[in-house]
Length: 193
Image (cartoon, rainbow, N blue to C red; front, top):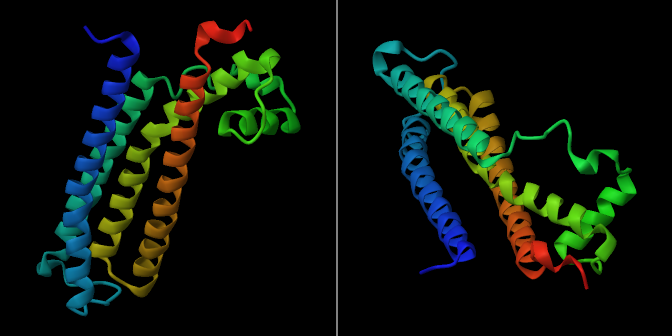
């Protein structure tokens, strides 16, 4: 019989795997459509709606709306919005918050007096992993816009959004991984001693 910690790790692994698979399955066709538009030389600011690109762009945008709705549901259920206005770390000044973040990231020694606050911050960082869906949904919306109206401005904005979100996903994954390691190294009952 697996322990509660093992079940939680398994749920996280399944969630990450399915999020990655679904993101790739949704983003890949959208990017292929965008490449077809770019390769076809359809840089008109107002393409002919009979070409079907406008409809394809709207379909991609609607898939982005569906992904954003899934994000809202999973983030709500995962506790991302819970306590947003009443966080214990809200009373700390900037230097104290940075100190806690350094402890969670492993850049500073853990202060046992601040361990409950550091654990809370680490749990919030782990909960932010649901923002992957937010990034995918917004990227789909921008890709759909570029497919439907492939002007230089829309294509440039789409490129910038994709680069920014790729960097954001890497940083999000890194912070969530560090927070998970911090929580594993400092379990809830081990604060005395």
